Image 1 (tube, rainbow, N blue to C red):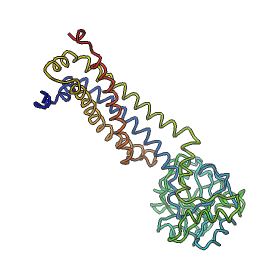
Image 2 (image 1 turned 135 degrees about the vertical axis):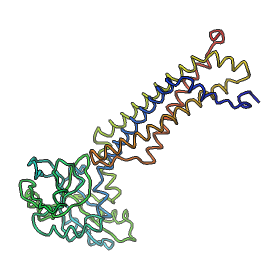
Image 3 (image 1 turned 90 degrees about the vertical axis):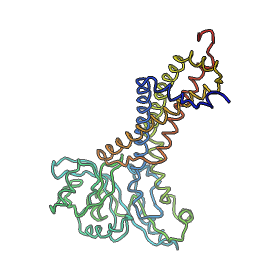
Image 4 (image 1 turned 135 degrees about the horizontal axis):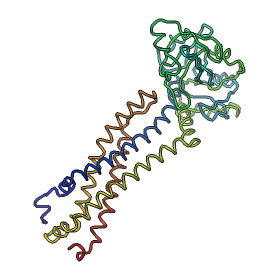
Length: 388
């Protein structure tokens, strides 16, 4: 048994802590790389999640859309009668026609205008999975009434504060007067900074260019025992090609896929995370390479005392593991704090999840262990004549 196994000397830890300043620089570099990866991937995933916030809230098993619709920010209409035709299917128990478009909202306080996503539906039908929403929808039966999303950006005005204080909130949408009759919690996205919900009657008044027989989204609810995919395939065989049919999960994935493949945003954030990984690799490699180079005589002495090259390589590998763990922890907690700051500032759903936390730890571990492997080459290739 070799000396290292007998004595169990924490050589890797002693080498790391021998020069506190160098250790601090290494951990700072790893932490910075980790924070950069956390933020880039957090923004990317937040973008995808924000783009389907409303999609997830729809009370639907199937969704009808026009084949010309590219995403929530580029919706095209299709004949409402296609939605009516779905009611002939034995498993369909309810439908909801939804109009969807961006209109100009006037801030009632500053009188400035800003685009807001407006959705119109029949108040007697179901729209959201929120059980309390049906009570709020009753107010929309009066013409010119809207429900305002309290999670909208503050640029739309102090709507929640005024409404909660009992003040009448009258403003303009698309140049026409409306009154806020209730509040909902939906959430902004990268495509829409705010949302309002109204009746189809009011929507057509706000946007008279919309044909009365045209809708942008058709929500379909089916029996609990029915298979959504099978019902969707059945409807596809019976409806014309001027409408697409998705399950709710497919509808959500359709939106995410647009932001993932049709825009540069997803690529940019992923690329930024990659840059953080490369920066971390360079920093850790420099630290470990310098450490190995500075201690070559000591390593040679240890080999003369009975340490094998395998033992010494293990020392460098353990240094990489220590750096990974110690650098990851502050990066994780800093990421949590920055996510909170982003959520409060932008109201976007940027939050830590177990999958991302594990992914970043694995990346940091690979970064440190990979750098350690490269630094080991300096020890393996060392010429004894040069060491002494």
